[in-house]
Image (cartoon, rainbow, N blue to C red):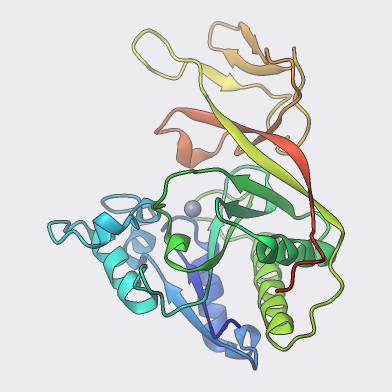
Length: 298
Ligand SMILES: [Zn+2]
């Protein structure tokens, strides 16, 4: 039974869709209300929003490790926001909230992508399948991170759904992206409610999952500066097949760098603006089919 759901917007200040969705829901609270649980909307990083930056001091979405939440020597703005959010919805060791939705956007052409983490279970896959049954273009991205304690905001809740929706530039609000983000949140709330009241719709038999394999860095020059551009044939082709010999980058000297692996991969976060600092150009995933186990009771 899920008694309390939190919806987080604006974790990254320049991903503004979540912030404006919270403003919409403040005027239309019925949209995020369901009879069987309470909904707590929360604006995660107001100062980064007003400065139109991803973060002010440090990445808020990497600030939720237990040891940092309990570290009284941390005084960064995001460190304090993480502690305040943990106090309001957590604490992480024994959270007050049962389910947490965190809304992000991406500059990559990833459409609506639901992000799952280690520890996800039958509930998460059935939730994703339910959403996909209403929005067939939705992608499911399983981000493997085997650390025992995770630094992401969603990690403070026992059940979590992280959304990545794009393409949308930083600081920009787009009607189509806004509408899709709203729709996917509505569907997630519908599913939680249907399950709460014991009327889960017939789940799908299986669901396609893109499982994270590796990140790919930009080509660099001798000084460590980016020395290549994501190839035009790869740009915007998130979740589509990448085969041996396909071009990845055009180097500034005009040379082409090609994909060398024998196994087909499916790239995501292609040319994501937020990852330039880390010189990451894209991530590779492999496609798998996850069977839904209908014998498991939820
Ligand atoms: Zn984000």
